[in-house]
Image (cartoon, rainbow, N blue to C red):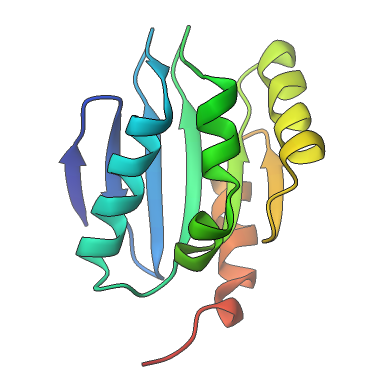
Length: 131
C-alpha cells in the first residue's frame, strides 16, 4: 500500500488494482486537481487502468468543471470503474447529480461505506486489461 499526498486529496494504492482518492476536508477541487489525480494514477500504474474508490471529506466538494472533467473520455481511458462513498444525504444528492448529469462512460456506483465499495470494485476487476 502506497499513499501519496496531493494538494486536494490523498491517493492510496490498494491491492487489487484499486486506487482510493480521499478529498481533504474543506477543499473545493477544480479541474486542475482532477488532472493531478489522474496524472498521478497514470504514472504510478504505468498507464494501466485502475478501479477508483472516491471519498469526500467534511465540507469538501468538486466544482462542476471538475466533475465534468472527471467523467470525460480521458478519465474513462484511465479509470475502469468508480465507487463513490457518500457520507450524508446532501453528498448523495450531489453524487447522484454527477452520475445522471455527467454520465461517465464507465461503471459507477454509490456506497454508504468503504467495505461495500471495495467489494463492488473487486467484482469490476475484469474491466482491467492484463498487460
